Length: 388
Image 1 (cartoon, rainbow, N blue to C red):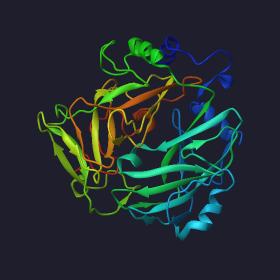
Image 2 (cartoon, rainbow, N blue to C red):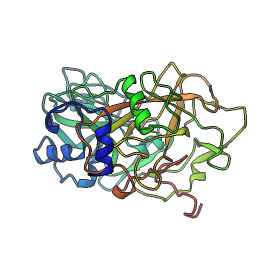
Image 3 (tube, rainbow, N blue to C red):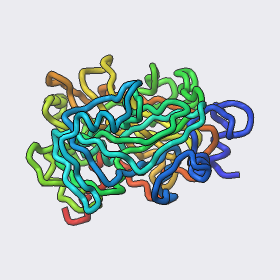
């Protein structure tokens, strides 16, 4: 029996019965079965690497619609009906096209759904999308909420895209967001999170030193000990286009200003600026858990942290980097300048059970970009040793 399964046997299980009937987040193999059954469908073949350990990447279709502003269709309308009312022009993405910062676009996705009544979904931007400050939200027909797919939904999927810091180039087939599917109640209670931390060490703090209240707290690292005094990056206001399909291509210094440690002073977040920071804690996600970071919590300050909120099973868990993977924090202040200081709580991790251990885990072996990460920009930028 694998170490992953042994560890899974020691943590809280979602319930009795066959995996297909258990409550929890659906793993890789369950989503593959849904694709085979036609519950997740697309006009083009869905490649295996599009399905992650506990989430699924979604692909942009061929046409983007520039619209006057964001909207929800509401219970009596489809997304296309609203697009027809508020569209300004169409953009063909087949050969790649620029989406300008500050504008709002709606793109029909390649994938559509035909869910059972007891299966619902939640969406989030992919990690690289959040680190580029691309604001995205999933929309379904008749929706009254963003990023939610109601149980039993049958129909198309759409993505609202609004680049915030950089204008970007996207293509038909570009993957900017991801979908997580769940059956029934799957959330760990605070007491269960504490037990799990005691058993497996969810962060690099001793049991009893963790802060758990509606999730496991993370704090910001502004000490500079891990990166030679570098504590963060601030997006430049006037930068070139970024083609999101180009990997390790761009010089970070064309797009970002480095933020160096200022002992005892912290940093003030400017409401007009976007920051990449890192957690002080290393994070581990056990093989039978999925995690989402709470994006905005007024109890810890008037700022939003981590646009890309999903952590898949195995994050920080497998390989040589186990125990050294930190959460990268995409931070934007609301309304007023806000002071962040070293060690200040900036977000909380909510843990969910899986129906079963995934057949593959997050890590370099499946092409995951951020295993073992510290303070790291998105994969589109060159890294030390690549000529920067």
